[in-house]
Picture 1 (cartoon, rainbow, N blue to C red):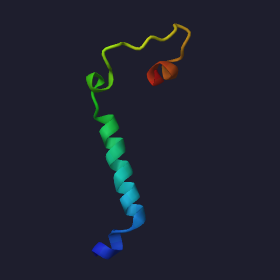
Picture 2 (cartoon, helix red, strand yellow):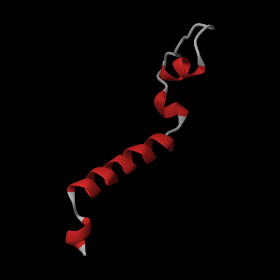
Picture 3 (tube, helix red, strand yellow):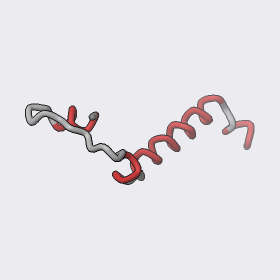
Picture 4 (cartoon, helix red, strand yellow):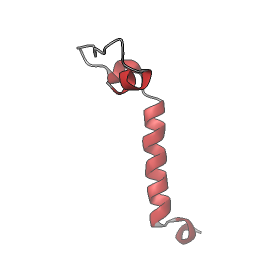
Length: 51
């Protein structure tokens, strides 16, 4: 059974799942630094999230 499921593609999928799960469980305080990002009021929400 291990040989059937232990492939290059399952390793990639497992790693990507781990990365994606880590991203959705992060807290804002873990991402922000001591300086707050500044965006123009004309920026879209997507642009503000990227900043």
